[in-house]
Length: 294
Image (cartoon, one colour):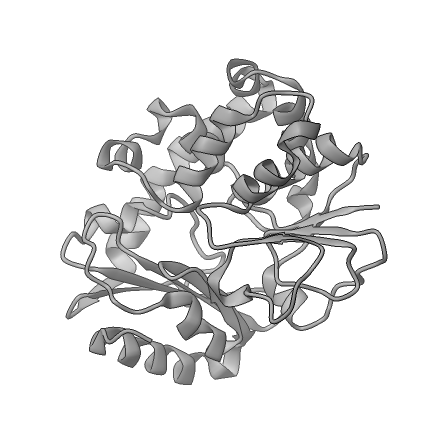
């Protein structure tokens, strides 16, 4: 039996809860949603999938993404919710060895982008927000850190987690990186109507940092589109409603399901062959600029 999830904060918390409730040992199988969608993942009987698209080969599945709604009943639990971890917590609450109530509350807020302006601008003052930002590089070389974080969240208090030497090092790196990331956003983002477009295709590697920062830098935007060139001749587009200027009417997850991706009504992503990037980007921008519910 393995836990299969994605490498983001919600996925890390899902893994911690599932390993606690089901007494599953490490390591976690870390997977990107696009790899699951394109059937590039070997899913085995007994696998427990969380925060990813459904795979019929698994034994249990937990998810909350609008674009992943099942067409038939499945073993596990699906519902539209702020986080997948919250769903796992609801399902296994009586089987857990620790009280994860505050961790789930914070995960719900972070994954649903329910943050204040001060949390966006000064994450170093908010432990959970800062901790979530240490999970930004989705390269497989980071798997040891993700596994380490799962273990910490299962066994340590918040203060102890934040005092862990590796966590402290990465938190400081987040603070330093966000300064550089702000400059990259300003230099590579344009505003077209109410849509801010961050184009990092000319940068290798593409900068990474505070995903909410763009909304404070471009307060007139209601939605941001970020495009990068990814590894293996792939490109990625991420779309998110502004959490400071709520005016975008487009269901992002539903829209991106037509572009080899998916997500929530307010945020999502797609990953595809690079030669499709000009066409996909133009079509996505056309939909967002019209700002008609889809």
